[in-house]
Length: 227
Ligand code: AMP
Image (cartoon, rainbow, N blue to C red):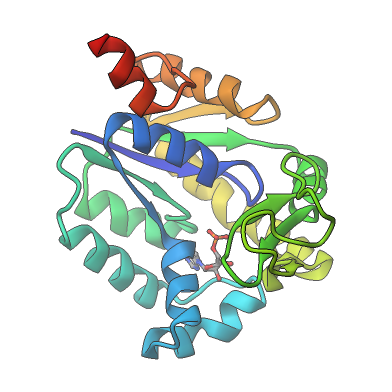
């Protein structure tokens, strides 16, 4: 069983790195931000409660977040473990987490604020199918249109320069003490997140003594090993 927390400012590649790790090692990727976005999109009661806060790039209240994390982990669909992304975001959430669950490590994706701004302001989302784009790393073929469904590409509501500046300030105020708390328990491995995504993934594997990263799709590898 492998249980990891992945931390890093928005745009540091938490989602990408979590998915690469989770898909390969059969871990469940739990993104608290995705859970909230799902509720907003599907107009649930929780979605109505958090919609404005999420759109403004502010943090949802701790009680609500802890309930969401507890409910999600209680599904126990994580036989081989999980990578939790976007949580904990402050000291109280970290203390709640440490009291309730034992973890194997904290992956801290380290990215300078300047690079965060460059990456986040280039993010786009298809308004129809939800596909992610990035005008630096993953450009659509037709500017402003989704390659998959032709839908219009838009910025996420919480990716405006103002919301981002607020988030960065908030992030440092709240996250630095969390990293310090985890560091005291010797859980934290800092990884330079400026490198390309495969290099970052390999560095994570090296730090935690995990099997080396193979960028070929998993189905291909199964096929090759059978051949
Ligand atoms: P993310 O995709 O991780 O940036 O999350 C998107 C939004 O969801 C954040 O801007 C917050 O409004 C909310 N959110 C996600 N995780 C947390 C958390 N641990 N605590 C409070 N709010 C959160």
